[in-house]
Image (tube, rainbow, N blue to C red):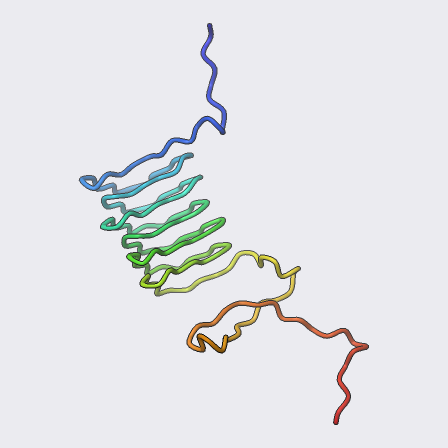
Length: 153
């Protein structure tokens, strides 16, 4: 019986830089990547990059998703979700579809959102909530139709 190449659904493996390892250079993988040790240089990951607690990355990163529980410094381009857990420390310029910073997580840098989710193409604005006036959230800016203008009182 001839062996067949695995399909994309079958290759759900994960690459690993373990806690006793230090990588310096270009790391490319079509799988998910978990870093427990140290990595420097450039990381190109077609799956999810996970930076474990205690790990340190100083790199230019491209990945579908990124989850940070350790330290990450550099430049990140993330197609979908960039997430910082309570132990995560990030100092980077990040471009992603969504940003999640859990309570306790640290983020210092510039964030660029690549797409507007659930806004029907409307531009985004920052609004405050009464409960958490120190937090800001993105919401669609709605422009009233021209025929519904308010009359002066």
